[in-house]
Length: 396
Ligand code: NAI
Ligand code: NA
Image (cartoon, rainbow, N blue to C red; front, side, top):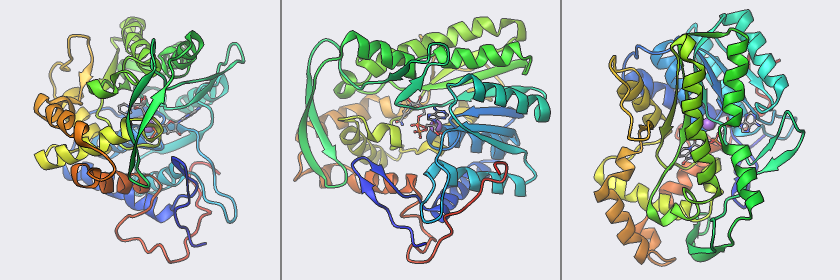
């Protein structure tokens, strides 16, 4: 079928298999061009199909020669209906990995469930014996709690008072004011259940109890801090409470892993265009200004540049892993540079529908968003028939 983007609100209903493959290819080429990493050899990536998780899987496999198992929740294709982008990304990733002789298998299902954890453990036992790194990169709006059967929904709300600020609809470029009413206690609790550290800890407990963690194992989850303008809705809002909880879990996990000399880390990453971040009000306007300022300064990075730097300059330098006063790895350092932030804050005041195309990188935002779904990739002819029925080699 001929596959074009079909937008509905903040999501795109279609994805392009060849564009997704091209996107994965470019990420692989980036990592490969930077040379080898003396890193992990057997890696489990939870949330492996898009965003930071995909970039982690690519970096571990193509930088460090790692065997990888990827867990994710994606929609498979059916005749005349495309898969979700992470499906096509993974199909391409596995194909490229297998061509290079790298082990790569994938599990598609709900990572929050006991069943998928057990399936993963069985696969590790059968094929790898143990893993020496676990990347935890889930971003989900809901979690069906495996012990209580309750479906929790996260919220993106401020805490204490209504938050009013500017936002942009990046499809139309229209800047408008948005007001978000404060969270109820229930919203806070639910968001912590969905995006906090409990499930990460459950994964580590299950893997450890099954004896599939190697001596010296490391596990890394991703967090975000960001600027003052988004603080009320992000770091000091419901999602921020979940991130506080996730960051605390890194210490709990490090304690649990003491017998193996293992360690749990949180890495604070840069704000990037992903499916998850596009759904948060105010963030797209911030990102479009940030990208402009960082591109002008020559410090802009995408997901693969971020994770490549995480491995090369933080985790596997041969020395101590540098962390901040709260024990977190920081690869948001270029974003949080005071000069960058001062410039963004200045532009924030001036940004409106008329000025934003000039002040911000709205085009770049929209381009990155299309790329998430395999669109606007160079070297792909979108008027040509594409085969939507692409299989992931390890999933039959
Ligand atoms: P994403 O939406 O690109 O990736 C989410 C991944 O989780 C996908 O592989 C998806 O299939 C998987 N997933 C979702 N629900 C699942 C479920 N129930 N079972 C199995 N897999 C499931 O998200 P992104 O942006 O890469 O986020 C990953 C982490 O990075 C999150 O913790 C996020 O808060 C954090 N982060 C994101 C930033 C951003 O700007 N996008 C900035 C800093 C941190
Ligand atoms: Na991810």
